[in-house]
Image (tube, rainbow, N blue to C red; front, side, top):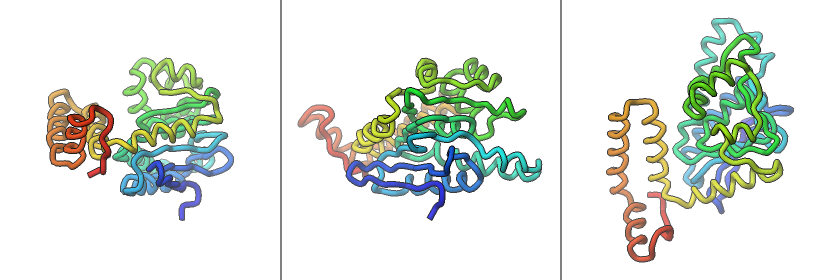
Length: 261
């Protein structure tokens, strides 16, 4: 059993929650990082789960790395650990299902990078985002310099990373960092509600769409189009595609009942 990260499954809605629970602020020490990676692998393969929510609880999402642990690291030690850190967050980003980060309180440093691994970010109206690593004399090391520019644009990402300043949920919404803003008590429920809608969709097609979009961002347009074409044609071998097209012709759009195969 993991100590600080657990997977909770709502089989009725087919929603899995990756729940951080390391008091008081969900600091992302090495153990939490390893447990996040294991949780990513678990939700990715659990057939009961159709969509995922990442949540740190009602008080704080994750206030960043464990500075005390990190500050004691030698260059040799951190050189090894940095690879493990990125691998954990890459595993989260590659979960082959729709993932929503439900952010209450602070999402700073590694916490912001954790939110960036999700497909969507739902934030409490009083949530705070930021990449303040520069104020420690370092830079983001869990994907912040790569995922943030892809999300909000290069100039905005540079300004946030270079300054280390905090960003409100409202500002995050205006620059594309945040997708929805809700009252603090409603954020998790809204994320689960949205995840449940995705979980009812064709899981194989959603996985293909996510892989095509994310994979295409890392290559040129021609390679991206090739990736899309292969994914598109492969879906014609699925029962979901046959059901979706049959249902459309017989009953109109949006009424298919997918079996995720």
